[in-house]
Length: 259
Length: 260
Image (cartoon, rainbow over all chains, first blue to last red; front, side, top):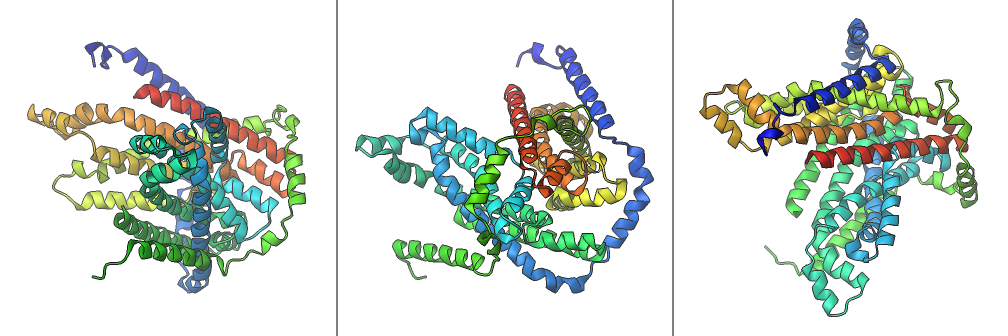
């Protein structure tokens, strides 16, 4: 870093960036109708809402156990399917494994498109296509996991060591054999840790999938909201919170054991 | 301890894995799949192939383009609010700023964890009751969720930063505030900017879903189109979201590369 690179000599650039951000901020906040006064004038509204939320209906808890377990099962199954599909495709998305830039770029474009669709929108569309139910939730989670994990896996394939590949090439292994015997052993542990990372994210995401009809605890959430039973809403929210904390804790423990 | 043959161990893992899949799948409700037919799927795909372009822009302010701009604006304001509001929590929960006190960072981290563990949709539902349905509820939902997400990442960066410049500042007699401004912030600013840009992009993605509950943006239009099974309309909305996120991804990627 030279003296010319310091803030004192580059102040006009920084000022310009601040100016652009300020213009964008005020422009967008005008467009979205954001006003702080509205928040403060409605604080008592929020107070009453939180007050009603602060009396969770604990008698509702037994009814929540089964949908909660189903949510966990859905996200587990969806994560397994998604990761299993992601593994071969992420091999195809790296030139290390394919030695073919055309296939690589086509697969990457496909993965990028899959990844841009937000989870909940995917669920809403799949509910329309497949139908209401838990199977739809599993398909949604599988597609979402597939998009997310495949990118992580192909990025980690690109950082592996090349010596085992060269060694296998020199004894005449074909591309599939190289993928299985010299690339997979190097990335297996990373893939397992990505599996748990994806599972944590999916548990969080699947709790709301039911809101659009894709099964699980979100169904109870939207039903209680529709009935204005805020004591039940807060019970659902609390149980989501508890389950997310437990899942994070357990997956951290398992990961520490494995890695 | 009994030593297990590695092959037996592998077999046990595989059996456990299959049992896990069986346990997860046996009592789920698969009935919705039985109504699914490839014929109807093909016809849906076919009608999605012809997007209703007239819907893209018609100047009424209720078209896809203006709603998408609104969505991006919601994400921008939400991320900006989240960034500013998370800074006090970062100062609270960074371990290296509280040398003697171990309790305060833990409290700060717990608050951030709690903020992060609810999905944006739940916040959106809460804020709709507070400020009424509309884009501002979406802004607040995204903002509060970003406090938790950015706060956690900012804290992690703060905790693994290089402490040498801080010590140098201390050696010439700087107090805590001065070391913050002259040693910590200059080092962290590029990383924080890159994280903020990344979360702006995540914010755009989640802002496009908030309309499902009535918190503004393009999601409302999508849910109406889905309820009416208007596949042409669904495909134009989806196409716009995909292209926008793709362009933003490229733009933020370019800026982030320049920051390094």
